[in-house]
Amino acid sequence: MENYQIDKYIQDGQDPKVVEKIHGKILDMLTPGESINYIALQKKPAVTLLPDSITVSNKRLFLCEFTKLGLATNFEIFAWQEVKDIAFKEEIFGSKVTVIPFTGENLTIDYIPKTQARKLYQLIKAALDNLQNQKQEPKESKIIIENKPVYTNPTPPVKVEVDKPVIPAAPIEEKPIILEEKREERIAPAPSLNDTFQKQEPRPTSFGTSSSIPSSFSNQVEKPTEEEDEITLKLKKLKTLYDKQLITQAEYETKKAEILSKL
Image: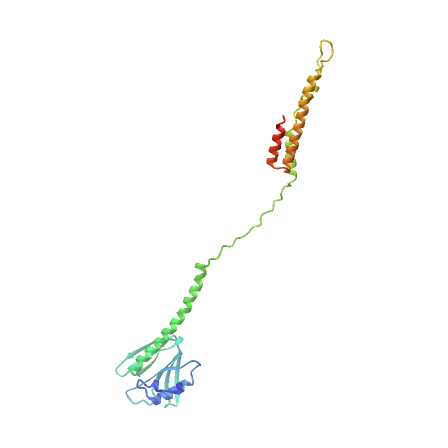
């Protein structure tokens, strides 16, 4: 299978036998979806049968050190979230690569060939930058979501309704009656001429008898009085109908004019 091929891990001068051994150990530690991207091997000036190595996967960083003549292996494994930075320094015999974690001591492997050290630096830097971008994207999205209601959909002010006291309405029917009584008092008919003549005491004449009014003159006086009383009653009745809203104002004015025209 492709995961067990080591050709792509020996293109920068790595020892195939050592790469095959390290590759087999790390394959057993990979998680689902994890794959090996690069393997860098230590190369000291003297012959080294089991050199130290740095392996880069798409999720983690593996530092491997063989001990006890290859019978034991020490691994320092870091997830990308635990790595703060990577540094390397080129020397006469290879480069010194240093892994800087957020917690704990820095780990350094020397005598890494310069070509492999540069490739390690590029891969680790790219992985850290990618992780940093992934952390910033959720923050920016969160800021947009939090600011959106403030600028696009302001919260309407809450109106507090206070119950108004209920004022009992005055009786509707009693008011017109009071007005009607007052108006009737104002439109009280004036005393007629007949009443005036009746209240007057008879004056003694030279013959010792009360003066009598000629019948013709009495008839002339009583006729206007009767007509005046009838007109007054009609006007009062018409006003009463208008006050009770049984006729309109136009009808009231028209009828009133008709009655007054008979004077």
